[in-house]
Length: 140
Image (cartoon, rainbow, N blue to C red):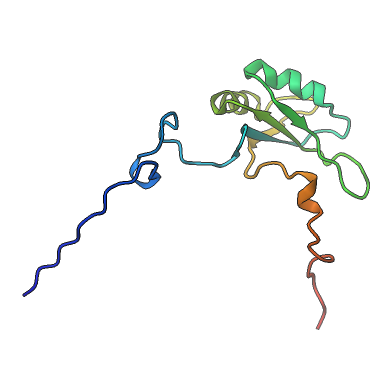
């Protein structure tokens, strides 16, 4: 009988599957909510009159806030009732999430604060010529 032995290839520097990597990553491989400049928090259940300054004031108690974005509906130009608050430091973002989730902000009780699943889309994302409106129900 023939014995089969597999030789393992040497581990490459930066191979995250085995805990390698370059310095400073502390083994953190979950990129949820993280982008080139930190972590974005999604804030939900905001009133239409919520202001970026109000949000920045509340969130900056937990660390440096890079950006506050209040998206508006493309057609009506009305606020969507959500905001993205961006922190450079993931630990500060986590502190803000824990402290502010379920609290009163901008006059509304029980707001929702969580790490955003995707980074904020810039306007060029929407101008890529993706064709007309999506599928939808066609009857039948």
